[in-house]
View 1 (cartoon, helix red, strand yellow):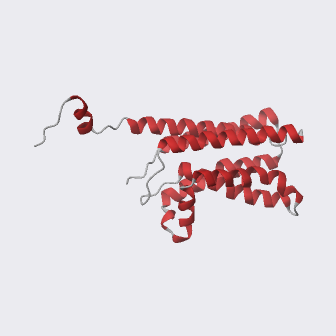
View 2 (tube, rainbow, N blue to C red):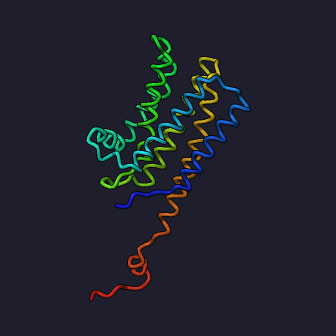
View 3 (cartoon, rainbow, N blue to C red):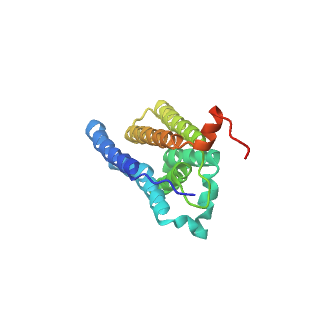
Length: 202
């Protein structure tokens, strides 16, 4: 199976990511820690998966667990919410809390992006509808968690992280829809012909 590659969409994704960072810095002036969180979750984690796709690192036996986990979007969603979101509130009760959170954030972000971006030649890609639903549901969870956190803690320290995440998720949704539409153009002419003209049994 041919692995889908679209350098234009990848370039668009990261170009808009950089613009979003600059815009949020101008509008909100977030703390440096929020920048680090955003870069790890929405920059480094997907970049590593794209790099692994390009270098075909998924053939290594040590990374096969990632492929198995990427086939379970519900589990990936739960790990993302717990590691990338809840750990921000929970880890600060532990020693070296910022480092603990950043480690969990990196793991959760990596797991989050695998159902959307992981591609290799020996597995079948998740169909578009499943990826679409996964992206919609995780985006809703991301926004609702932050809104609940702002309501109960009455703090907006993570506001920049929220806006950055929403922007990147919208870009990813746009990229997925474009890929889906492009793939739908490639119809099988034999099957299409069969709808309008009966095919001989010879």
